[in-house]
Amino acid sequence: MANGFIRYFEKAIPEFWELPAMTDYISKSSFTYQQVGEEIAKLHILFDELHIQQNDKVALVGRNTPQWAIAFLATITYGAVIVPILQDFHPNDVMHIVNHSESKLLFLSDNQWENLDEEKMQNVRGVFSITDFRCIYQAPGESIQATMKQLSDKYARKYPNGIRKEDVKYAQKDDDELAVLNYTSGTTGYSKGVMLTGENFCGNLDFAGQTNLVGRGHRILTFLPLAHAYGCAFDFLSQIAYGGHVTFLTKIPSPKVLLKAMAEVKPSAIFTVPLIIEKIYKNNILPKLNKTSMKLITSIPLVSNKVYAEIRKTLVNTFGGEFNQMVIGGAPINREVEDFLLKIKFPFSVGYGMTECAPLISFERCDTYSPHSTGRVIPGMEVRINSSDPKNVPGEIQVRGRNVMKGYYKNEEATADSFTEDGWMKTGDMGVLDEAGFIYIKGRSKTMILGPSGQNIYPEEIEAKLNNLPFISESIVMMRNDKLVALVYPDSTAMDEMGVQPKDLDAVMEAHRKNLNEQLAAYERLTAIIIHPTEFEKTPKKSIKRYLYENV
Image (tube, rainbow, N blue to C red):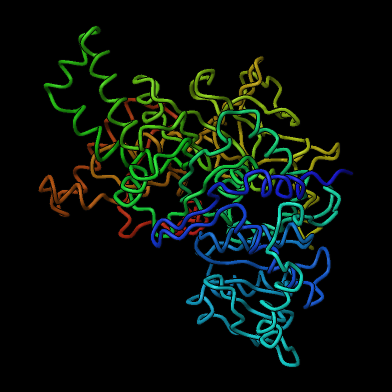
């Protein structure tokens, strides 16, 4: 099979040689494509000296930085397998993944090394800082630190006049071989090693090239975790493959920090998760819309169009003002927020994918996007709905095609459970599929609740309505003692601003419950709203770990 995945980068580095490739937003240090090629070449010499073989595993954990990205690219272009680990994982989970993957080398941030125990990672021969690639640990009997001292001389001998475009020659490796071993952090409480091939990523990169989301000189501000498939494929790999300039935020993306960076970078496209846009809507836009004067203005059709156009312009400028569209993925978007973005004609679309598809399953550009869908099934992928009436009755979404993983690493049982007998991968999501190929997701099959008369209740739909109510930060809807209830974490900031005391909260929530129930079907109505004192624990993708609260 072809080796197009590695060829993407072998072609891109010489083609975009003088262009900026990567920038650290905080330090402002930058790498051109040539400099990225130089750093990759140095790491390839190191791998050669350490006798790293094709398909050996190299683990990588740390915050998004140019050095993180270079270590990733160096590993895959050498023909080894990269094991990106989310930096939010507990140290015990990091060590488990390093061991389970049989990684021989580990690249990480200096502060993370302090929390790991080298004696519990016996396969690891050497550990390297992704700050400056120095060796910070070598296993007994290894001479890696001595090798590192000679690395500059070895590079100078191999490239006496510096690296040239024609020197960029990378590994020959079939695309059906393992390229990335990506450990998920789902809502079910344990991680699995998703085996992703070069072909899986080619499916995503090929599709990216067919859109206007990538291109020579495009600017991207990356703030999604690159150890997650969504950010990795579209904020990083596809941008480099097509000559983009990636700026790494390199700090926690609070709304204030993020919007300041957007204004400076002025990205050409934006890849985000719903949480970001939902917070801006709830905190910045909704309070203005709820003012009596604004309600009167927006009730007049001709005037409302001008008001919405002005809101759209302001919101676009908030995100830098130069992006062609915003792609929202990684989790379901709140329906009220989506309806508002559609009303003001904001340039956005919603995509659908999962780590097991590296990640894309469906997407459609904003100008042809179907409201409330997750886009159209992309080329190279097929979708079917396990339902008697796939257009109208929700069933499990099942997929097959070039983006679908090989399976779960060293876990044949989980792999078998994830596929049907005729070879379709079970996503665990419930939805319908229309004639045009648009997917409409209703919820997770694992979270779906069976109503008293057999009705399907999708808690995510009720939670979306709850989360837009005053003084509610987030919620979980579940069945307890055969009654539908909601756990709610209050929005203390909003309470303080409006002078709402904690003693009044129960009465406020009871009023919310009654008002909300009037909008719901009889079988969806809540019997209680229960205050939860702390923020719900989440995955790095910001999905609530529901299993932690089901029996509390």
